[in-house]
Image (cartoon, rainbow, N blue to C red; front, side, top):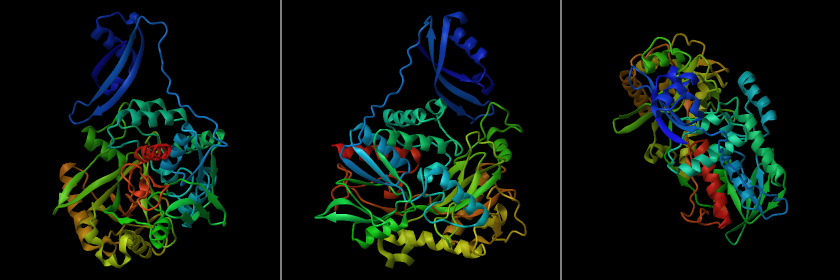
Length: 514
């Protein structure tokens, strides 16, 4: 086997005959000697007019039998093993459960929301009838917010082996092999539900338990040691270890911890809007050509700028995607975005958000460590009121937004519940509004054509990360006050996406074992 690094045009990259010919020439061998070509890593470089893929391949020569080392997990039956309670069935909770099974412990997942199929009906009601089920929505239910988060598998973690392990587990449960190769892997919101269900089936097959419609309302604590939890139906479930993986929108859990004087900390986060452009426009800007062509993916972008010493940046950019209503309670409007696996929708969208500091939230200082929660909630509630107390999201055309002008018309966008023309200075504090206005103007200079009234701004994008951190011991990962309580994932302030949440879930499972 030999490893080759190639730099090819998009057309060449996906032409098997050309690829084999190119490799034969590079290695000075005949094409007949090449028995197998395995793609190891693929990344797109669109910085110049001549767009290229960087491709890393393993080439097998004169081998009839090719070693293909399959990723293996050593799951065991844990039906009668020591129990560990996991609160939340998002990526952190599910991957914590899989790892616990490998370690010989029985995970008991308690999820406030419904299973995937039942959850879909609640999402339909939210989109069509503007009815928010506070226990079953885009944030709560099987798979958590991760199920409808687009399936982008990006992380800042540099631990290659750990990342490959998570990706391989996803492949073992139905994700395409491409996620092991692409530099920016993506599953797609249409594919994620089945993968999540497959993970649940694995957990149950090996003796774990998954309980839906099971909301935790209290912790059972004795002598600063967790003993179990109390559920809304008055069921007590006992265990010496509890992984708290409830996600960034479980405000009732933050309230419960605060009420019980279990230490939490206010945390900076980011908040802003979600902007939608025609995908063809973003393709033209990024690829510097009129037609994208079949060998290039829908183009994305990543934008960052400092405006008066405050960061404004793109967040969760979704090429070929849609904007979704992500409220978790009546009386609020929240947006997020996702893309299907083919990223073949006519529009692209991205959060454009402003970094917040604790001093920005001083109007809610009387709420103590929950000040960020109340700051976030106040903007969501104001948006709902301005939208006529519906989920028809406040919207402005982009240039109108920057000029402080109410849009006389809003073109149809991908946001199914509809839009309401609103001037955004009525939603946001002045410093957020002005930072976003200046940021969009700067982005227009960075991407010629981006700053246009064809684009529509939706508000707010407010759930970028948790406004609360639940502290934990650096070595044991336990809460510093409560032995056996393991704050985990996005809701605890230790992750930001599917991959990082899954990694943190495994870390907490490993910490319990040690």
